Amino acid sequence: MQYLRANLSKKVGRWVDWSGGFWERRYSAEPVLDDTALVGRLRYVLAHGVKEGWVEKCAQWPGLTCLPQLLGAARRLFHWFNWTKRWSKRGSGSGAEGEGRFAEQWAEPVELEVAPLPCWVGKSEEERQGAVRELLQEVEAEARARGKPALGAQAVQAQHPHTRPERLKRSPRPLGHASTRQALRELREQYRAFVAVFREAAARWRRGDFLAHFPRFAFPPRVVPG
Image (cartoon, rainbow, N blue to C red; front, side):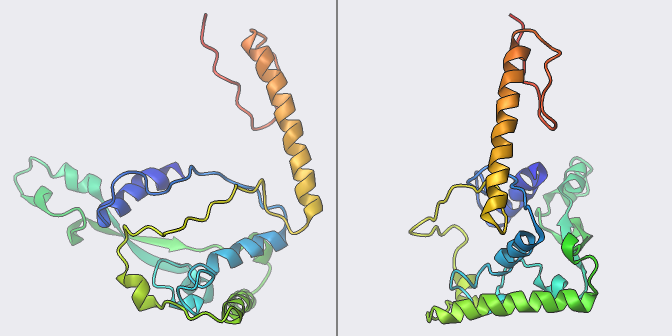
């Protein structure tokens, strides 16, 4: 995610003439606690563009989407613009460094493959595609039930990438994703226990007790010599 927020976001920013941070929030990872919730996260991703009323069908979304790979070949070819190669030509006298950052000579093929959800690994390709189509039908049926016309893919593409919405939807990050409230309550209790053990160990660590036991996956705080 650090690479995505740094290197990739810079390249996309150059493409649309955007300066500064590309995403407002810092990255965070929330656990998905069960298979039903995992499928729900996929449904949320596929609904992008439809749930906001921009397009009528998920397949009409003009932006980047994994839908073609979920319903067809899992592999897809993209172009990666190798800026390191471009800058290595500086001073060579070839004039190649003067080419734009997105010139074809810097483009290299990159193949991406979408792996099936862990809970769908035992299903056949036909069964997985059928499950995806069911999700699409649910999303599109909910959009039709709202009775509002969609903006349309052409109108979406006509918008300037710097345009900001008049109203921003802000909501707190969830602690995790689960299909039952009981699972979320248990996660919250486990997290509180984790924090309590960490704080106690951190206090001992700062006092010089370097044998303090930290919970698994925790990092001791930095101690600055006094």
